[in-house]
Image 1: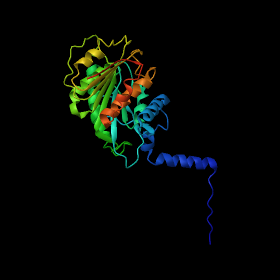
Image 2: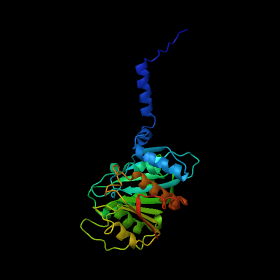
Image 3: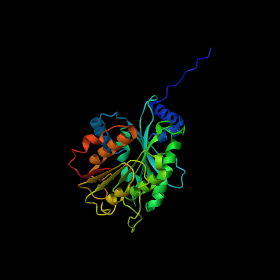
Image 4: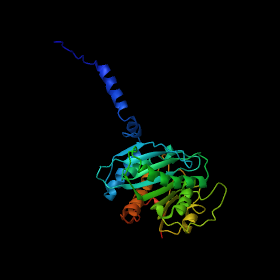
Amino acid sequence: MTLHRERALPAFGLMVTLVLSLVTISGSSFAQDNSQGRYRPEGRQIGLAAGREFDERVYEVRTYQPDVSSDAFAGAMVFYPLTLSFDLPNGAIAFVPGFRANAAMYEWWGPALASLGYTVFILETNSPTDTLAARADALIAAVDFIKSENQNPDAPIVNKIDPDKIAIMGHSMGGGASLAAAAELGNNIGAVIPLALYCCEPGQSFSGDYSNVSAPALVIASAVDEVAPPADHAKLVYDSIGSTKIYLELAEGDHMFVTNSGEEKSTLGRYVLAFLKDNLDGRNHLASITETDAEISTFLQD
């Protein structure tokens, strides 16, 4: 009889074997779920605070980078809630940056919104200097991309999104683009949120009309924005919107208050989350906070 002895792997060899095994098992899924907390903590804290205030379920957040084959935008950072297999699908948000900005400058929005159940697509434009029209095209294409990614069996968000609960957002020229896209998308979106919006292409004045926008709109501006003064941009555009609409003007904050460096993120996130919950999920959170916030200099609702 021949005895076969199995030799135990040394600790280093065992570790290498385990690592290689993990790499071999579904390498694509490990590449997709690359978060484990690797996102801006302030965004997460804003989401947690809103969840407590509004008595909403709070989710763990993960992130991945999808393969994008679109002529309208170059890529996306995706943040999504970690849901259970029996959970109902949630809403999704497409966000387009402002002129000369990139997706990473808005990273805090991902964990802030995903903490309360929304899958967030922060777009990378083809060029930082893309026109307003190109940014609008990016948002329109992103809505289709969200729906296709929801059907992608290799995506961690497959069947996790309710296609009837999609909203679009944008900052600066991206904010102006969000309204232009909303006019085209009609009932394909449930809300539009322009932030510190710049109305037009560089050097142009607003002479348009958004009376054909049907999605509920939340327009947020800063009273001291010198790049896009509200009287020439946000408020002027707001007056032309035909849908149910809300106008918020912060007392403080420069044109970049929407980005990671902004000091008004808590107020901003609170109002945006309340608006999304009200308009995508049938809540009534805005009514409880609009009378009490000293940081808001102007609040209009039509």
